[in-house]
Image (cartoon, rainbow, N blue to C red):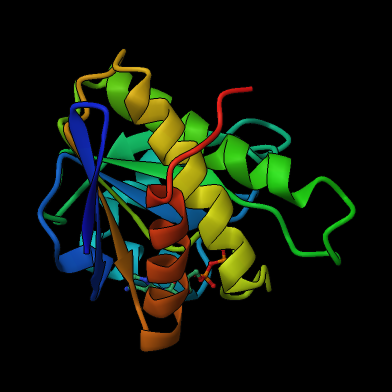
Length: 186
Ligand code: ADP
């Protein structure tokens, strides 16, 4: 499934994000940037040790705040850079999780744009170990990315969401269909 956003496009696919060639891969990291399971584990396994060595050099003293991100090289991944983005832990939805999640996507897109990326891949940030409901996360993820691309101020031509399981793919397909329905001017 694919939709236009300004002169760029947003695509959804099911797969392993470490296998999809792009300019910038976004990783769902934790604020310590010390490596975890899920997509982070897969990124470090496939990318090799150079990514963690670089994180060890650039890691901020208090870690990376929720909604923030840092960039490293991509080691052995089929990409030029990895953006390590810190999504929020789901605490029921009244702790500003939606704003933090939107910030993780927007910061990642800004960092990728600053590196001249034409293609960027995202996993479903926060919907694994961090427990964010997939349908709600998909709506935030897709609207944030669409708004960023529609502004037309970035070299990014394509954003691909690489989703790991059928249920998550379906949640994103539903949210993307909602996005295509158009919007009222304020
Ligand atoms: P978080 O801690 O932000 O919730 P997780 O890595 O636990 O991050 O999960 C985020 C999403 O990434 C989940 O939907 C999980 O199934 C998915 N995921 C895990 N491994 C991969 C992979 N190799 N490629 C793409 N998505 C993956």
